[in-house]
Length: 98
Image (cartoon, rainbow, N blue to C red; front, side):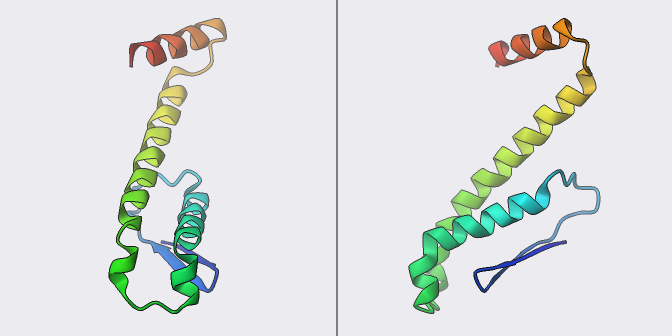
């Protein structure tokens, strides 16, 4: 579980223990920062209408997808290892074939 407290708000991420958690705290902080920057006025006005915040679901989903993509890229790099020139060539082939 990741808990971030900032701006007088609490962000809680509950994750499976098998879930890869590479820089996950930074991701949680980024989520809370984005939420606050989007809804600062509503928060400061003590808005109680939860439907005001539904648009954040899309932003959070995008952030999660980007996180998974970075994890997959990182795992591919770990699988390849570093073989100098060949590592760079393989990376170029993979990015050009996508």
